[in-house]
Length: 223
Ligand SMILES: NC(=O)c1ccc[n+]([C@@H]2O[C@H](COP(=O)([O-])OP(=O)(O)OC[C@H]3O[C@@H](n4cnc5c(N)ncnc54)[C@H](OP(=O)(O)O)[C@@H]3O)[C@@H](O)[C@H]2O)c1
Image (cartoon, rainbow, N blue to C red; front, side, top):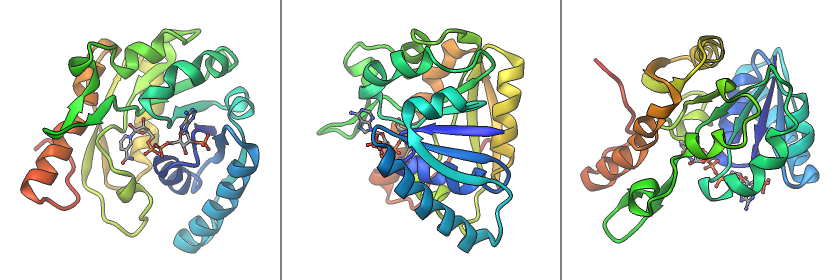
């Protein structure tokens, strides 16, 4: 499978690339093709160091090239940039492409981490990205409650749940498969995309709990 990461030069992108390159061809996207290429080289070295040989590859290109060639595309960009990035790239994806949004609409204020849709009366991430999807059924929301620090550290033992929201069983199954490939992560389906705000708001909840109670490496696990 060809997995594209828009904004793949960031922390989450690095984690996804390291983890999924074990089985897939990962394409790191950036606004700057040279930066994407540099990151791809760095991630390849790190993946080989961590896992020995990898079955897939990690390459880098500009975001649009990555979007056009992906079977699965993960939007690893800040909430604030959805409107500037998504119209061009999402109009160019293959009809069959599954798009994943891990985007958390969150802001740090005097009181702690807050949820932008409630604080500023704005759409949640799934709603906003959905506006730009050719086929809205292919959009799946996931990975909001796993920190980049855990994804980029292949030796860290994971034991966390990942909330998943989406409207199409087939697309959700593809994302569940990718979650299961990361040892120690379990997909937990919450329901259709219109419930994605529940997953998205879990991140500020978790971060406030972490900071106020000095909890190291918090995550969510339903028991
Ligand atoms: N960090 C976490 O632990 C974590 C956990 C769960 C979910 N998330 C969510 O995952 C997404 C990615 O997180 P991250 O921490 O990796 O983000 P990030 O490092 O802040 O940004 C990721 C990439 O987005 C691109 N970008 C930055 N500003 C942009 C702009 N103005 N226009 C277009 N692209 C821009 C950059 O790539 P180029 O400059 O190379 O284009 C950057 O490397 C976010 O939506 C976040 O809410 C993060």
